[in-house]
Figure 1 (cartoon, rainbow, N blue to C red):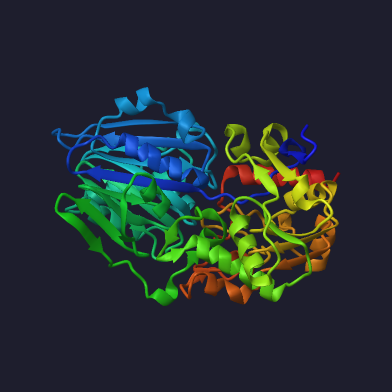
Figure 2 (cartoon, rainbow, N blue to C red):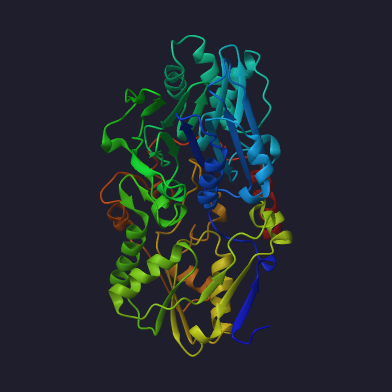
Length: 496
C-alpha cells in the first residue's frame, strides 16, 4: 500500500449515499440519421442518475409502420452497449434511459425504455420519477384485464397513454390526458411513430430540457447530456408542460401548468443529484453548491487548516466554504466512481457483501491538520462515521463536518430513496447526538431558510426536511418491495 494513502473498502459498511431514480434522453433527427450512437453518449453523460440498468429504443420514421428496435440490460451504459449493438439499432427517432430503482425491483424486466405495441402503433417510453398513486392506477387497469410485464410505475403510465390514444386525435393529447391521472413526480420522454414527446409533472419535481443539434432535437434530463453530444440548449420544459417535436417544430401544451407558487422542484437536484456542469431551470448547479458552502461558512464557522469535500457533490460546496472563510481548499479524497454493477445493487444487504468500490484519503493532505469536511447529506450516518475515522487514521488532528443540506427527518415519495424515518440518523436525535455518533469534533447543517436561495427563489420541495409535502403523501410506503425487506433486515439487526 502507498504510505500516503489510507484505504477504505466499502465492503466493511453499507454505502450511505442517496440515489436518484433515472435519467432520460430522447432524440429525433429530421435528416434521417441514426440516433442510437448519440443517445448512447447522452446516457453516458447521465450515468450519475442511475447505474443499475440502461436501454435504448429506436425506430425508422421513413418506413411505413415504424418498427421499434431496442436493447437494454443490467449495468452501466458501457457494459450494456458495444459498437456492434449500437450499429444494429437503426432509426432516426429514439429514447434512452438509465435507471436506479426506487420503485420496482432491480431486474432486466424493469429496465427501460418500455416498448408498447398497440392498436394505434408503437410507443417507446422512458420515465424519471415516482408516482404516489401507481398502485391505485395499476389495480384499476388490472381489473379491466391489463397484464403487466414489470413491477414499475412506468408501465402504468404507458398503459394509460395507450388507452387514452384510442379516444384522442393525437398521441400528444393522449400523453396529456394520461398525465392528468398521475400523482407524483414524472419527467417523460415518449417516441411515437413520428413524434418525440416530453412531459413534466405540474410540480416540476424532476428536470427536463430541450436541445438542438443541426436538424435534430433532443429532450433530456440535464444540459450536461446536450453538451456531451455537441447540442445547444433551447429551453427547459416547464412544470406541467407537454412538448411535441415533429418536422414542423416544437408544439407546447400548457393546460396542466400550475401557478409558479405551487411548483415544487426537488432541491436535491441542485445539492446532489445533477451533474455539477448542468443548469436546471436556468440555475447553475455549480453556483448553487458554491452558495451552499458559503452559507455554511457564514452560519457554522470553525477554525481549521483546510477545507475538503467528499466527492463528487461535496467538492463545490467545500470550495464555496473556502472562498467565504479564507481557509484553504485541499482535495483530500480519491474516489473510483464507477467500477461495476456491485456498487449499485439497491438492497442494503447486497451492498454490504459485494460492494468493491474504494474511497481513499490522501495522508499528505490531512496529516497534522484541522480538517473541515463538507458532504451533501447524512442519511443513516454509517458512511460519515467511517469517513471521519479515515481522516483521523490519516493523521487529521480535528475533523469538523459540515453538511450542505438540512437534516433528513422524513422519507421521500417522489423518486429519491430517502428511507423510512426510523432509519434516518436525524430522527429523534439532536445535532449533538449525531456529532457523537459520527465521531466529529463539530457538526453543522445548512439552515433550512437558506434552501430557497440555492434555487434563486424558485419554489422547491422541502418535504424530506419538514414533512410538509406539495401534495398529500400516500398512507402506505409505495417506494418498492425491497424497501420492506431492507427495513425488516435493519429491524432484526437492531434487535440483536
